[in-house]
Figure (cartoon, rainbow, N blue to C red):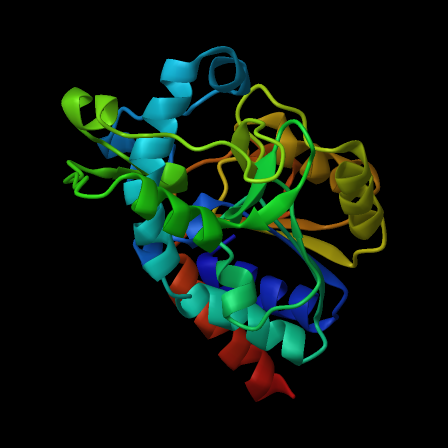
Length: 278
């Protein structure tokens, strides 16, 4: 089947409404945020922080927070791209019922999207592992600036999830802070590798998929089960799955339609075609 008939089929499916979007890091690369496995990921050898390493080592936490203190500013400055705006446009037209995002950058919400489930949490919040209190990342950023006067580090590169590459001596000179309320260990309110997504959040995603007219996967290789399970869930229930991504994905055999294409360009064209048909 040529590209045009497949795109026409995608337009018709989305135009029918009740679309659930499952987005991954590939959607945010056009906003300057790198990913682990896509085009930007293949140019780097980034090893993500694991939950077990973070909670088990004060040195690992120092390394994480020093690098994140620099890298988070890059994430915080990022703005939604054409792909985010297209999804929000589809939602404003009543066609998107909900969004499940594997991203932690908040760009869906920044573009005006609603009903967003942040599967892996968000970098703009911090959680205490002792008392469970959640606080804004901006508050911790200010505390860290005050606790590290004169500390300046230059990032060699920015990795996914706001992780900046720093020299060892810069990391060693960084002071880490604990919870202002109870003195417990602070962790970004995101799900690290090796950590489970809260069960209630997963159940909410399953329920959203079960009500969907179609599942539209955007910018995810679906390598990890965390996102791929929802593709399997849809396919098992004969809910059409369409995937737009740069490169092959784990879910390609489960999908009715796949597109190896730019997210921003393809989604913008999708909105335009739907508007023309109305």
